[in-house]
Length: 329
Image (cartoon, rainbow, N blue to C red; front, side, top):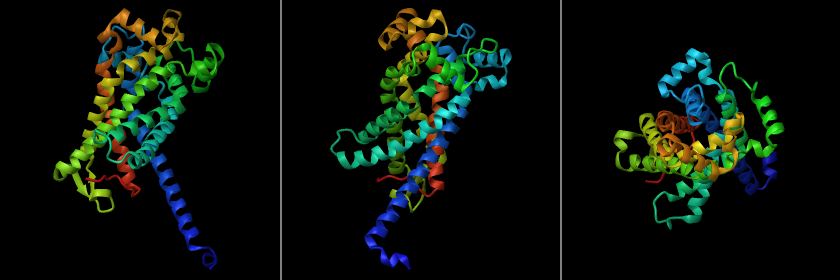
């Protein structure tokens, strides 16, 4: 009745706004859940990685599996998930922002750049890098807090939870700047990490849909291109993307961790003097493989399933909500 009094173009615009708003809300929720699933799946590997990266006196002489066994024996099984609460608080807005920003950047970059780029799907690299930078900028303090909590060993606790950690760092180490310690190497590492993650996943997805649809895809008429990747193909594409991305960005990830944890002990305070200084100290004291790439084997063990689960969960949930996961072939 009342709709007859409203011009048709306004009704159309209102429906479009509601549709876009619903799609954005769905994308944010799907992205956040995907991030939480992927991080929880590899939380024990995340913790031992932090302990090895920062040369914890209790774990630096151990390997990946012996370190995991030592955590359970010395602390408890649940200690494998120490810091995961802060991780969940961080990862939902991080993943929601990253995936949603990627979709937005990809859409507008595709329109702005068209086919003028020399490398196919290069717009996906730029969109992925921009999305990673956007997400990490908004959530970085929570990553610092989570690293501090995960680095603590039972019986030597300095922090009693997320809020206490944040307040302590803020009051005793220099305010907001202390919560962002290690931010510069994180940003520099995020560009190749997020860029290659999204670029490789989208490129491999394109290859699967174009050259091996019978093996890797199912028909889905509502999708662009009429195809959707099957779950095993999603996992393989995501896992490979994670391995490539980590190979390029890992030294800066080590630098970030050393800077985040620098003020926990007087002996490690030297790692809080700046990115280049920290890189130099790590290289001079431990070299490349035992310093800048320390813990890389475990990083492959965690990064490959983490990225695989993240991309796969994101796409599966998008399909469940009837959102488009296809691409032009």
